[in-house]
Length: 259
Image 1 (spheres, rainbow, N blue to C red):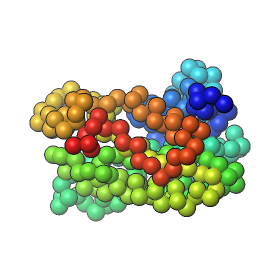
Image 2 (cartoon, rainbow, N blue to C red):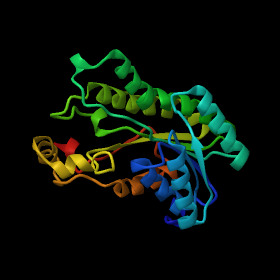
Image 3 (cartoon, rainbow, N blue to C red):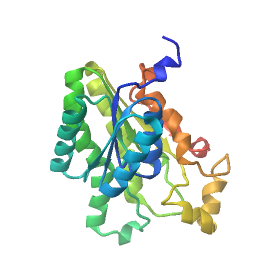
Image 4 (tube, one colour):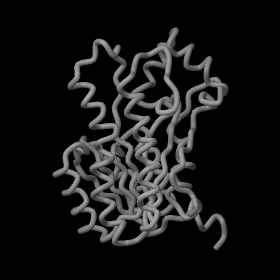
């Protein structure tokens, strides 16, 4: 098998949570272009259906849209059942759903702290457990978690203790699960993006100001990334090209954490 063949995902089935837009959509598109059938799991069903239709048209591979609240065990179980009924297998799980709030710790209501933990880390627990039951039976699978450079360093100047804490937890969850499930042929890794220009952040960058100036000052490449710049790492970790890679943190941050 040539090295390029190792990156092919022909016939494989990938679930991407939060996959209807932003980073999830970009990484899902990369997997679809490599040959995978996609499951777009998102709380916004209309947008997920739109994204699924777009992927099918562009790649010719199947794409299934599922309305899922990733913090609901019932929703997650129903999603996995639907995926198995439709495809009969799950090869790749991309845990991507997440939220962030810039709130000073002393001002953050406890229920909002819990919400950040539920969406950013507890959802990964729920989805990984359900999908893991399938992968353990298959004795093969790749799980990729979206963490952040915020799980490695403290961002400045914005206050986001909840986000940073949750992303640090994602990194340790990734390493722990990689260790436990290696015996089942399941690899678990995480991509840790830096500042990215997405639909959610483009207004920040357009407005500029002290916060953006600070972000870029500490980014050696001097610019934010774009979602498409994560596709290569996503495909690498999903495919057999990374067959000896597990428990790793792939940081894609323009050099921010190198300083």
